[in-house]
Image 1 (cartoon, rainbow, N blue to C red):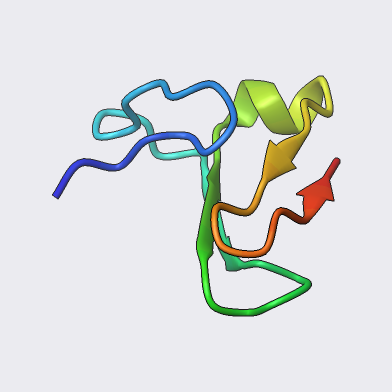
Image 2 (cartoon, rainbow, N blue to C red):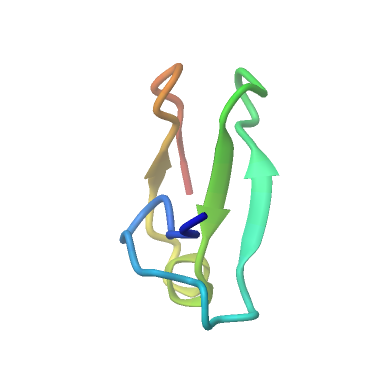
Length: 54
């Protein structure tokens, strides 16, 4: 299974500093964020409900 950042799409298979969490709005989609996107606060969007977060 490929693990990619929900924001920038970078492949995270070789990274160990990323986070996974359920969408804070619907709780049905897993959001995966790389270290860089978290640091610079790039927005992510839930594919199911459209929620946008920092």
